[in-house]
Amino acid sequence: MKNKITATIWIPLIAALAFAGGMWADYLVNRHEPMTDGQKKFNAILSTINSQYVDEIDTDSLIERTLPFLLNNLDPHSAYIPAKDLKGVNDDLEGSFSGVGVSFMIMNDTICIVEIISGGPAEKVGLKAGDRIVTIDKENVGGKGISNSDVFSKLRGPKGTKVSLGVKRANSKKLLKYDVTRGDIPVTSVDAAYILRDDIGYVKVNKFSRNTYNEFISALNKLRVGGANKYIIDLRGNGGGFMETAIMMANEFLPPYSTIVETRGRDENINSVVLSDGTGRFVDSEVVVLIDEFSASSSEILSGALQDNDRGLIIGRRSFGKGLVQQQLVMADSSALRLTVQRYYTPSGRSIQKDYKPGENQGYESEILDRYNHGEAYNADSVKFNKDKIFHTSTGRVVYGGGGIMPDIFVPNDTTGITSYYINVANAGLLQKFTYEYCDLNRDLLSMSKDVPELLKLLPNDDTLLYAFVSYAAKNGVPARWYYITQSRQLLLSQLKALIARDTLGVPAYYKVINDTDVNIMEAVEQLHNGNAAVPIRENGRIVSEADSVSRISAVMGVAFPRLNISGSLVV
Image (cartoon, rainbow, N blue to C red):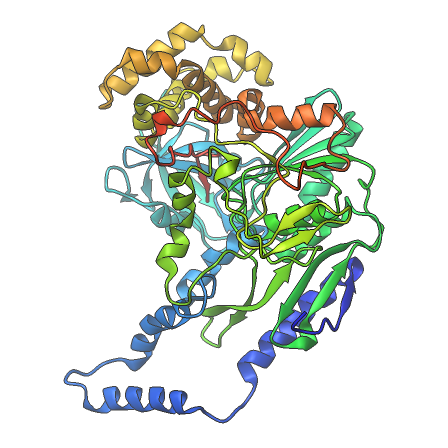
């Protein structure tokens, strides 16, 4: 071990860890050291530009534009955040922001309200799902190429301030006007939590924010009351967030004195080993974690802690591979520096950070696409392990460092039903657009349903629903090709029903529908039923099983097929 580990931290001291991080930030910003030759050169160049450049130039603005390029030469995750962007960047992780309380999508250059946040300002004034916002503070925002960032800037704002909205509603010929007073809007991290079947609870976590642990433990407790004693934690697509949140979540499943994570950096004084404290309420529950190539950072900390302690079963595909820890340093002008100050290591001692070259981020960013092109998303044998980075779990199972976390059970990307027709309608966003308009036209009927089973009974038969969509797609530029439509039939119907459920009953309803045909969920349920999640077993240190869809890759034509926007909306 190159750096000495100088601190052992228990879960009750996580707050102290965060405080130490703040002290570290202050140390970085305020320490005074003699300038190096390079720093002197930089100052001399700026001074020369300021005094001799042909045109008068604002050197502060020049530095502002230069800083991102400077940090790009460190590692792929160190970044400079301008003051104007900092609040927006932090909002999703801080647990709440101030806005109007609607979930929206932009369709045909129109702001379409998908969901009204319960108890929020929009609900109080009478806005409804299906409404289309066409004016904001009397400014026309329809049909003008408005972007998501434009909507954020116009509808989010200080608590207590007002915004005037002009709304088009399907059952009203005239424009409806609403004055909305902005208020605190919670940012939720748990998209869905329900009894999947029998005694198995399912929890979908989309990020690791300030409030995620409280949401997560509340969801687990409710599931336990509902009869669950086995759990599936879905971290697919979860890009991470706060390390402390992942640590507290892992603690719930680990016996006392289990290593959760180690952090090591150049400053040995802030290196740490974090151990579980024995207060976990689900230490005896079987657990499966689902991951994919978009599961990163804190998702990998939680997955690695459970895998290396032989405490849960990891199912899916190799995770992203981000093993670097950033510290956010806020500057005097309210801009921020997110600087990589440490690497983290899983309990077996492995770093899962994938390779990168400082200043060459393009290859790093395209590495996920390379996995698809090399067939890794479809066949475990395409995964190349680094035999020089072999580690062992608590029971001696072989795991590998570098390049993410390899699941105990590999489930390939399910390409069943993926045809050129499906790719075309998915890329054009026609699945979401059709279901939004369908719900808008049938809202009175659909709103009579109280749950997913009731809703599905209200939908037309499969042939009618599919024909309606195909006709809609043809009118919007994707002609019917029945040979491919037939191949994609079940996939299309599953997505349409799930999206209708989302638009009618909310995001959790989407997962209750789509999970019924999800091969990763099926594998997880089978493993839990067979009792394999307590201590996962590998054969020869490798994978124990695969799903049946490995060979179905021809329809994807060698590239990743489009990932449907599951939540389908953003919140303001």
